[in-house]
Image (cartoon, rainbow, N blue to C red):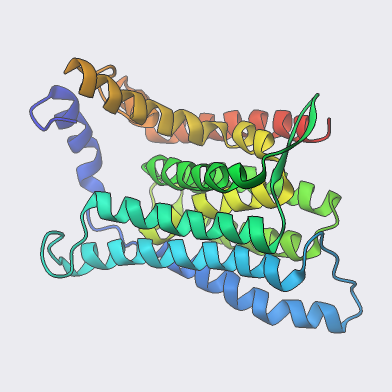
Length: 305
């Protein structure tokens, strides 16, 4: 968005009052979920609860927590740059394209772990059945991870928007993980849901804390991995449909400007366009949550076909 446009000035005026809101909620959530998981899983096992999973337990946990922590650390780097004011082009700086390359590298590592260690090379297509991709699964899974990483990060622009939609998505995937008898995954998602609920109490409008890039990158990537572990990629796209709309609007804006020199929308992503049209922030967030609930119900239905 150009700084000399009316859309920019209106957007800047609406968000200038938020300057100074502390960030770091993502780091807190990641740390709490990792700590509680390490604490509770041995206790659950010793209480006699039978841990069931469709994959080798250690390998599945490696994939989940590698994604959660690796993308969290990449985002934490960005948060540190902002908090301490380091120059992005100086010794400590990384350009946007460099961070995007790192995202892709991490995504390919995760995809290889899924393919080689967990022997996953398939996903389920409603009405058609299971589709096996072989080695093609690796770039396919990496694309899904990178897409949802950036889709969630782009959506994280209004108080309570991204985490509220994510909470609804995770409730749907928790139900799927329980139905598939994957104890390891269901406990992880349940802890993640609990941490998000506590965070949302302070993140809804007017936000007293923001997620930051640590959560912005880690949460989208891990949501994608949860969908890939369950083999429900189609359901993932439907349930996470609001994230797809957000990243799609930004992608179209960039491509349209690149090829035509003009803007397709006055501003992108989609939630900022609604703000520009006069929608109040809580109204946008609440209606996004309603849309997410409808998409989650539809996605759950598709996953059972």
